[in-house]
Length: 377
Image (tube, rainbow, N blue to C red; front, side, top):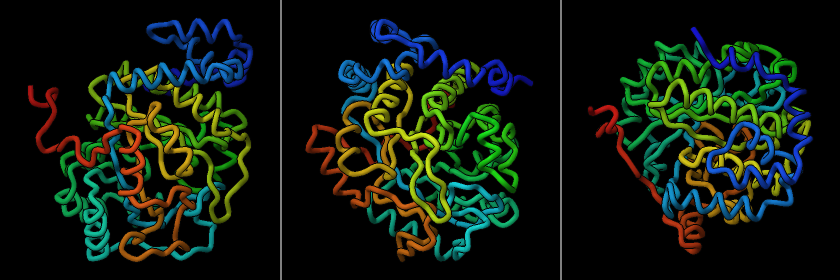
C-alpha cells in the first residue's frame, strides 16, 4: 500500500536545503506572480531570498485569506486529559524521564474541566494526552469520549498514533479531527530526540496521516516542531510535501497546518535552529500562498503582541487561554504543564483584540452531527 513514506524516500534533505538556499530574488518574484504555486515556488518563498519580500507576501496572503474565509477566525481550546507518557523525548515536559507529578483525569475531573471550558464559550475542543498506550489508550478513550462529545460541537485529538481501525472506531464515537506532528522530517535528528518508547518509530508516525485519511477522518493536522532540526526551512518544506501528498490521495479530508516553535519546558533542549518572528511570518504566508483553502493555526506558544499582528494576515484558527496540564481550567497546577504558554490572555480578551481589527471571532462554525455535503450525498 502506497503511503507518504514512498514520497519521503524520494526526497533528500541536503539537496532540498541546497535548493532552498540557492533561490534568488528573481525566483521569489516568479513565485509571487504564480497563480498556483509549484514545489519550486514553495522553496523560493521559504528561502533566505524571500526575507526582503515579506510585505508583498503578507499582502497576497491576507487577500487570499479574506477571499476564502472572510473576516472569521475560529477559536478552539486544548483539554489535557493526562500527562502520563511512555516515551522519552528530549524536548517535552511530559517525557517519562522527567520527575514531575503525573495526573490522568477521571470522569468527575473531566466533567469539571468541560464545565469550565463551556463557561468560557468554547465549542471546538482539542483533547491532548501524553503517549501512554496502556493507561491512556483506546479503553480510556472509549470510556470518556461519549460524555465529552455530547458537550461540544466538534472534537479533535492530539494523542499517540493509532491504527486505521482505531481511528475509524473513534470516528463513530464523534471524533472529527486529529493533529499529529512529525516533530522533524529528518530521520537521524528524530532518532536523537526520541530515546525510548513507541515514538522512536519514525515511519509509524510518518504514516499516521495516511491511516487517518483511509479511516475517513474529517480534519488532519500537520506540522513540524520548529527548532528541533538544524533547518526550519527544510522541515517546513517537508510539511508542504506531506500536505500535497495527502490532498492528492485523501481529497475528502480537510487539512490544518500549525507552526509550533520550541518552547521552554522541564528538561527541555535548546533549539538547534532559531526561527525568529519575521521568519515565522514568512513561513505562514508561504503556506497560505501554497494552499489558500487550508486551515492555518497559531497557538498560545506565541506572544500576545505577535499573535495580534499576525492573525489578521493569514491565520484562521487560534487557541486562547490554553492550559497545558491536566485539570488546568478548574484548578490550575502549572507544575504539571507540558510547556509554558506565552499568550495567557483570557478568550474574551483575545476576541476583543481581533474584533478591534475588524475580524469576527467564531466560537462555533459547524456541528458534526449535521454531517457535511460530501457525507450526506
